[in-house]
Amino acid sequence: MDTKKQKDFQKSSNYARSLIEASLDPLVTISADGKIMDVNEATVRVTGVPREKLIGTDFSNYFTDPEKAKDGYRQVFKDGKVQDYELEIQNVNGDLTPVSYNASVYYDENGEVAGIFAAARDISDLKQVERALSEAITPAMKVWDGILMLPLVGNVDSKRAQIVMETMLTSVKENQIKVAILDVMGVPIIDSAVAGYLVKVIKATKLMGCESIISGISPAVAQTMVNLGLDIGDVTSTSSMENALQMAFSFLELEVIHK
Amino acid sequence: MKTVKSKKISNPADIITVSSNALNIAKKIGFSETASYSISIAVSELASNIHKYAKNGYIHLNIIEGKNTNGLEVVAIDNGPGIKNIQDAMKDNYSTSDGLGIGLPGVKRLMDEFEIKSEPKKGTLITTRKWL
Image (cartoon, each protein chain N blue to C red):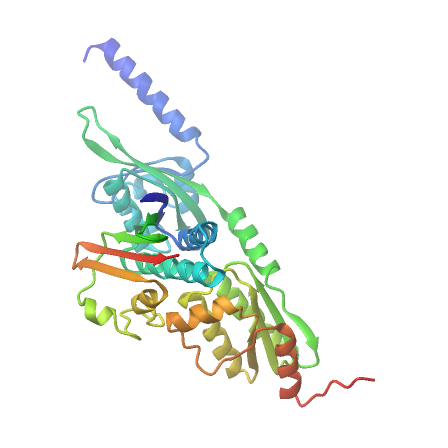
């Protein structure tokens, strides 16, 4: 290479480097065997590991779920790209950063796949909002002495089920609840996974000495559950909130009297 | 046959999205409340299976024409581990994971027709239909 070419090469290489470093998002290139080839300063910051120690190590080492990270880059090599792939970066100081990756393969001058270019975006704020929203739409109300009402609105996934479980168990303990009513009228889809979550929540509540009633089972849900072969065991369920409340009263040996 | 929705399944949110899509499409083409709900649950179970066993796959929703009536066809396809023993997988309360063991026999009951092809280490193709 003559001096001019060398200078040009150095110039373009410096330019590429400064672009990569200018990114506030953690960037990384990964080889076919899953090793980190290059990183920018943002990656160093989020992992807490110096650049020279990151390069050459397994990409998957820096995540709370290494297997999911591996699946992620394998998928990129298979499909050419992935979008919005969520992972959690673990900093050496213990801090966790939820991130969403966009990644694609890049090619060398011969048109061969050279590796993966992956960009992470910090989604901590988004996750916090999601959680707050999820908690906000899972209110637990004490409707009578010893009776708790938990109306579920929206889709129930494993995270939401966990929040429902925590909300319910905390309220049961704090308010000495004896009967909890879980209303599922506002849950658009009750498949076997959702039914499984509900059964778990109810079992845990029972361990704390509290009975549960599921209310708001519509005719469509009831028929589908039977056809699907869902057996929710000895869980008490009713179609309406009104019936559920009556059952709760009779369980507590209370009577509503017309004045 | 007209494909009205093709959805890649790679995370839990996709399962919810595709089953809501199925519910709306079924209602739109004239299925009753209960039948529409059955279809959406069948889709949800198939998509959950894809996510659980194969990690990634596709759900296609097709409007199909029969001799006398139209219907909705749900195709679930993945390149996952496949099913070793289909007869076992079609038994009630059989599950290789920690689910409720509902899965495929439940889906079969919710729909009118059910076909399954699976090869270990290659993947699984399930085609299921419900007629209006």
